Amino acid sequence: MIFETVAPTVKHSWNLPKGWEQIPLGSLGVAEIIMGQSPPSTTYNSVGQGLPFFQGKAEFGDLYPNPVKWCTSPKKKAFPGDVLISVRAPVGSTNLVREECCIGRGIAAIRPKKTILTRYLLYALRSRQYELSSCGRGSTFASIGKEELSTFSIPIPFLSNPSYSLDIQNRIVSRIESLVGELKGDHQLLDKMRRDTSRFLEMKLEEIFENLQSVRQPLIDVIESPPRNGWSPKCDDNPNGTPVLKLGAVLRFQYNPDEFKRTSLPTDPNAHYWLKPGDVLISRSNTLELVGHAAIYSGTPFPCIYPDLMMRIRVDQSKADSRFLVYWLQSKEVRHFIQSRASGASPTMKKINQGHVCNIPFPGISVEKQRQLAHYLDSIQSEVNEMLKTMQQDAKLLERLEQTILEKAFQGQL
Image (tube, rainbow, N blue to C red):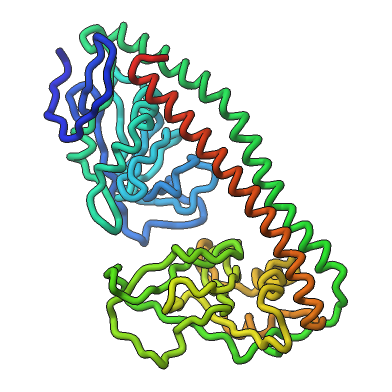
């Protein structure tokens, strides 16, 4: 037999058909595993010179519509026919290589031998992504190494008869792609519904703001004091530490109270970086699309520190309504104002400063009118959130159905 197996460290409980075997990836004749290695940062570029460079799942999720980085001196490469797999959190995400690329240390390439079809290997790994992710080591940023990958097993039919095995593999792949293809239309329809639903609020915002009187005043005129950057202490996630918001706590003009970490460093109770319920937070550093996004701190967690990558605004309630302000910051007028002033060498990290925020144009309308508009927009936002929540549940059902298809395929049940 051409397969020299190694003792697997990951146990599977699936029942396999007669003639099938669980074979570790590192077995002779199955696959070659190439762990990524990041080249010197001086060889990276963002202008398309060299090979597409990937070092994390977020970058290769849809190879390669718009790589963020390229590399002119790659240390490790992947080629068409290889399967890329993320070896750092989220561990186990996979995709096929369509063109030669450079892989960094967050990625591994699995190169199947002639006895394994590439797409069979891809779907076999996806069918056990949960088990792959559970192999990750580390509490903060889980990762897996070459040893874990080498001993991770996939089901392979009739190893002793390679031509028959390849024929069965091909049939399984065809069946999977036929069934999953039927679900693709549902995914596309759901994606369109989500885009249209999100666009509905944008349309209402445009409709309202285009009809506002043209008088503007700088934002500094309706806030208690100039905005201030927060503090980003070193965090150790000690459960008894002080909560510090992550940048993701303010995203797409929504506040997420679960996006925080903790620090054990001593704090000053009189410092400026403590939040109060009702404070408006603005992202001062992010991608061009996300920089300047804002949300209202809900009071959870409490007490809480906001980070240096955010600015805090305290609205003068006699002059402005905080909820209206957050909606106004989503307007085309303000988004153009912010994006035209955001700067930074990196295309993925643009910044605005306190002066920019102070000079954001704000409508010269009464506080009462602002509150009326905010109340109306709140009702629309609530409906949109409810619809998006339902669609998210539908998306999870589709994902579970796809996973069920994969699991049955590799138990010989399709």
